[in-house]
Amino acid sequence: MAPTNWSIQPCALADVPALAHNNLSAFWTDPTWRQMWPMCTLPPFVIEQATLRMPRNLLNDRATLRHQKAVDPGTGKIMGYARWILPPSHAGDESWSEAQFPDASEEEKAAAAEAAESAWWHFNDEEVPLEVAMSKTKERLLAEREYMGRLKFTLLCWARRIELTRNTVLDYLAVHPDNWRKGIASALVASGLAKAKELNVDVFVLAFKAGYGVYKRMGLIEIDRVVDYDQVLFPGGDGEYGAYFFVSKVYGAEGAGGETPKLVEAEVTPVNSEKEAVA
Image 1: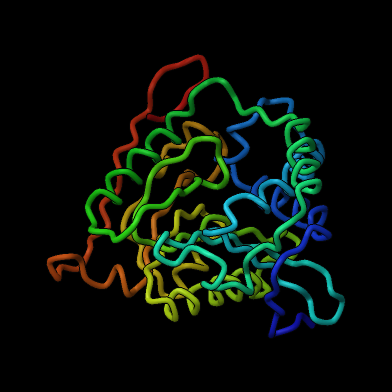
Image 2: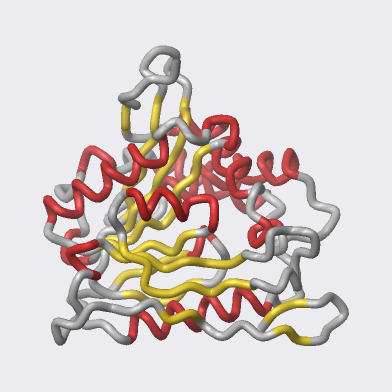
């Protein structure tokens, strides 16, 4: 029987191979993620390259990034991972310090940078229209609200970044598909939401379909989505691929004027190209 209380712990450099395997295996189940890579790319190769990159990623932006792993208390095995971004008003060594990645020596940082630079990490050169629609929707949503600071948010660790303000952001959530439906993702999200409440900050999440039910169950409010319903990108699927935008209840229950936010789906229109896609 699976444990009902997963142990949520900080991450360490020794966790890198297990984290890379967990994270990339999780994201490879999502068609939107796979679409970003050249057709010949295989998961084991991407996991290998992610292992090279991860030490630098864990050491980057220590002032605002917070990392957590879910561990099976019986075996010590890593079962899931979450990365959160604090707003600048809470940046530093004192806010949520237990989830801050330990600092490293200059030699360790140099070795991490060298390993990361040696990794092959190249997405498709062809622009994915669905991704463009996601980015435009994010920019619109975040421009509609009043925020108190500025921070960076990476869409599932993609190369392109956009400016956000005020929120604590759930930047990355991954559970290996072998460990789905065991409450691991919920435990990681609950830990971050509890900390956000303690710090009195709001939460913003961009979710893919695999995590949709988790955020709904945790009480987050969906405020928008960008979805391909026409199976244009992925023929033979169930016709629903894209991104879903959530906010915490504190932030989403009422807008700046007291109004309740309404779900308004972004327009996603099929276009002609060498490969059928959506815009």
